[in-house]
Image 1 (tube, rainbow, N blue to C red):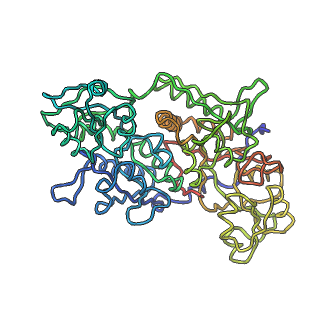
Image 2: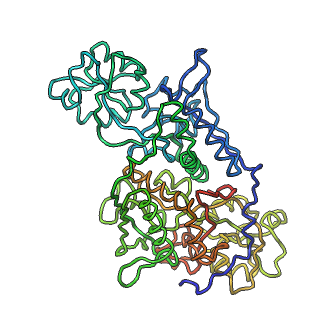
Image 3: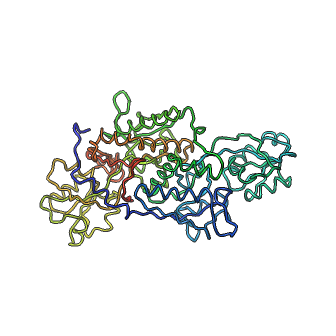
Length: 560
């Protein structure tokens, strides 16, 4: 049920800012792909410059504005991945199981965001767009389009291992694969192919002021988003923040300045916004996040988030429809189990583009689904009986005290490794009963879930913060059409920057930490529905958190 009046969390929310700006730092290792204007080798063969190197500096500045010291350690010795790999092959350097010298946290490159690649890596907000076109010999070129070349028996040079060759091979009769842009240009000049197909930015950079080669002006397929690539198994806080900092770099105008510097033009993305867009969504029903009325309508926090996202889309000239399946809520699934409904291999009626639910964004889930920017967060704390002798988890461990932990939760998996003595309990009620009975000295769980469950009891919050922050976000299908994925993420960030998530927190959770929250680690009823981190079932005590908006990111690390 929804509480009639919000209540404040006793444990101070200000304590979430336990990590100061000076203490918070992130270091990411990076390889890169060499490309004209994007990443260029200096005359000495060892120094590098280009749009991507300048962008890395901008990202560092955006992180600093959020109180985070970001270091992007670019490997300019061994990390020139284009020397050994195609664009597709280089993604192996971001594989969670990558071993050896050429393994990185990110790749600075002019990657096309494609559905196939999204199932391998995570793409942050794009920095530009591009489209595929063709180039020909200005005076001797016989064809002005791939269609003409197909009809006349002509051939098309395309760089191997790129999204361009993956996209155009099915519609091109004769493809001549080349190793890189220079090889494609050489083959075109030598008459080994009639056209060269690439994106407008790479093509323009590669031919420079070359008078013998010119663009045909044709527009092939759709607009591609250009972006860097991140390892999907990075800590969720890093994925969330890197997404935000790329977004900040774009909306601040810094990327436009870099585009003007390196390419001679700016790109406002306006051509990429469709007039209409429709996405399907499953839901996990739990008030106040999501509740289906008798008439089939959806109410609650997530319903209002959906409306906020649609409003942001409208600001960009797109009429967004979110087709929410209220007739078949995913209440019988665990949270992890429900992710199969956004799997690329999903089959059946319950397959969706996204799920509206109070999901924790975890590293394990990031390799299954792609998560939207976060809209809430929470953290762990400890609770004790009124006469309890320990005031912190560390104090209890040092003295050999015992800690009640909920079996099957992320809390048990992480905190359990540090607990001196664990007392297992089956759900929230069992843990609190054991705590009150003196069977354990402390109970550690989510502050919001536990505060709600203990509001009418004498159990005391110790006021400590244990571990790091959980971020809530909505999972999207990793093979979702890239334009949908990019724009949905942008509109979440837009909503956060506009303060909409703060407004919703105040409406639903009282504005200072919340009333009721999500049920992800909810108390089980034994029948398998509801929260996946517990023993099954939904919770009478739910969880929420602190807003992590595009404008302000809480300075704290993430518990995974």
